[in-house]
Image 1 (cartoon, rainbow, N blue to C red):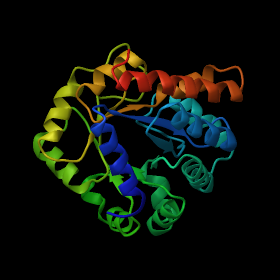
Image 2: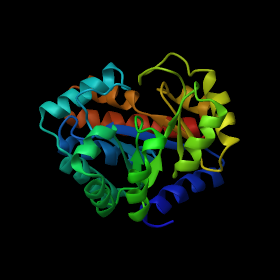
Image 3: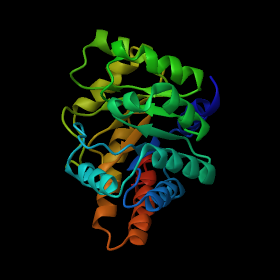
Image 4: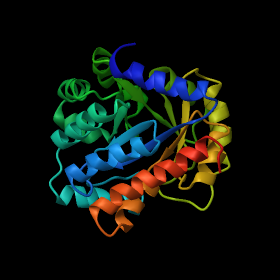
Length: 271
């Protein structure tokens, strides 16, 4: 294990040592602007997030709900490019020392070039990539280059994944396993799916890699609930919604910092 994938593993292990789940925040690059997005990522970490996933905005984000789609649209209309995503990773990691991953659909990487993308992400200090729509059986090229550059490859498992499929996915991945708590798109929910705990249990039966749960966690009580059974709690739409609802960019950054603090208490059982 080398580079920032080790930092990711060490960060997740340190949270476990403290007897708690890690808090993982998701924020799209380029939203509300490239500079504003960088400030938001830094604020999430300063507020209490252990890890941040930086989203690469996509014109057809099939797994994302309306909140993240709105933010992606704002970023794309602002002209965000992969270079801006790399800059976001570089500057946020340099300022905080925290592990920063990129979450992206496969098509932009395929068009950009796998070798170029992995080399640039590693050079920027990125810890790895979450690839929600890349099938494991088609991932050999990506994994070869990710391994070469010391990057984690995080795959997504869902409640519909059969045990045999879970074993195949977890054997191919690294860093952590992203357990989608429910079938459907991202977004805040009134309650966390009861399927999440069962999915974590079944996934853990196939791997020692940490299992982190996302989709639907939006407040400290839900974070505390998921933290009881998962190694990490992933929150995205709630952060983005706070920024969308803020009267200006500076207020949006402060709203991210405040929510990270609230959720950090949640994963520590302080709610």
